Image 1 (spheres, rainbow, N blue to C red):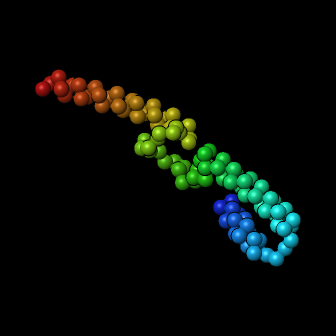
Image 2: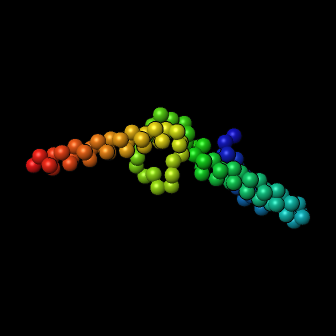
Length: 103
């Protein structure tokens, strides 16, 4: 069961348990346990999202310069590609200067 599914299941249990005819002391204990489980799963999901673990399989071998506001997810690929991009940018500027000087 994925973490997303587990979170949905635990949330559903919170809703369902409130309609059970169980004593309030048991409900309190069940809600406390479900709350702690929801917190643990949510923090685990948050960790996966911030480290990029959820989308690693989608970005293998791909690199784009677009929308890199919060830093790289895969430093090795980006470092190599950044060096190439900087080299290409420098070469492009030199060519532009040559064209402008010839005009």
